Image (tube, rainbow, N blue to C red):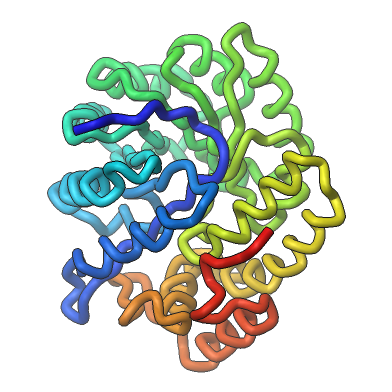
Amino acid sequence: MTSIAFEPKGVIPACLMPFDPNFAIDERAYRRHLNDIAAVDGVDAIAINGHAAEVHALTIEEQHRAVAVTVEELAGQGVATLVGIYSNSSLEAGRLAARAQAEGAQGLLVFPPDFMALGGHLRPEMSIEHLKHITGASDLPIILFQYPLISNLSYPLSTLIDLCVRFPSIRAVKDQIGDGNQHERQIRELKALDQPVRTLTTHSAWLLGSLALGCDGLLSGAGSVIPDLQVALFRAVQSGDLTQAQAVNDRIYPMVRAFYDAPLLDMHNRMKEALVLLGKLERAVVRPPLMKPIPAEITRIGKMLSAAGITGNTVYGYAA
């Protein structure tokens, strides 16, 4: 198996996980979905086993299988496999990391344990211990997930900086802090480290503004539907072409409303419905307790696709 060097930057869509009517993984549809995204010029990696893939509802064996299938499908395409490490057990997180590396993944996306919402921000030694188990099991580059402030799972800035210094394999932060002031401060302070750490934004509801603050890329579930538009926006910002960036953002904005309006937990359900409307998925099945959007909302998603100028013939075909 030929590996590729992975630098956590650029455009990294977080893929969805298709299911059949009996809630089993539809592997054929998953392979097609991966290849649809990977075919977009400018996509640097695909993140799997994350929120977009309903990782909370995947068994450990299903997560392992997703890694194997993804590595197989992306081989030779110049697109890296980034594996989500999502577990409330640091021991299990270490095993997931080791398995991902053994299967041929190029990077890890590390989530904080959910139960740390009960006060983990007051116990930074818990975050250190969690990372020790992961970095002890794998030397793959890590993207650390910085959750929103309102989640009570975000790392205080001092903890975030300390983790990046302690663990040199942390090469980037996926930032969803949700506060513009804190977002900019983190970008600047991470860049100022002796070993600079990149910022990948996942502020998909205000992507243009976030990228303009100096992010090194983006990691977003919306990339499972509009990777071409995300690439076009990132390139326009990188080149300093504000007029072009605004034009692309005008096309992205209807999809912001389609995906990210309340309740936010329905965002990936809506993305599946969008891909069905575009002929990219056969069905939009989500695992309970997530629920299928009602018909009126599916109709609204279709209208937002039209407002963005996206059809089955144009998706993944945007010309920058």
